[in-house]
Image (tube, rainbow, N blue to C red; front, side, top):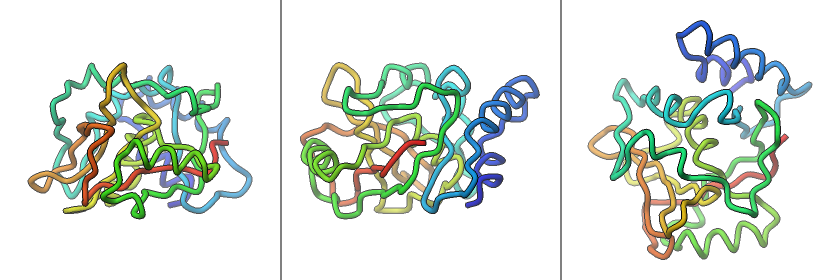
Amino acid sequence: MTYEEQLAAVLPQERDSRNEILRAAELARPSEHPERSSLAFSRSVLAPAVAARRIERRGKSIVLGHLEFEELESFVPIPAVDVPAKPAYLVTDIDLGAKYRNVTPEEALRSILSDGRSPLTIDEGITLMLQQPESIAKNWGYSLPGSRRDDQRVPAFWVSEGRPKLGWCWDRNPHTWLGTASCGARI
């Protein structure tokens, strides 16, 4: 997707929120648009609960698994993740982690970090789903180990009954249908 297409996918209908997102996005506009990238925002510009409520895939709205929208903010970046301290940024060289299917998120995270990559956060996963809702499919989803709470839950996206689902999985349970998402950089 082009930068403009990514921005259009994230923009809400409300004028006040829209203007703030447009201002933030303009600061993150790259001179050249990297492939396999996604536009992401700080929570001060786009709260996870607000953005997640707008996710749709094939005309079907998101469903949460054992979570409430207000709980999404309780998943915060892990210490190994360096989120840029700016209103908007690009997540580049995204890999949804097919090679980590049937690997625990805990093991996948170690491998991602040792490869010099960074795990995606829940905020980045939410904006990715707004921009590219077809990144999940039946029997194919991905976990977001760059965000955690004070427990063993790792947020993840998958398809359930034809709808996009945001839930969580235990960090020590492998799933044949879940990859582990990562990126090469945040700029």
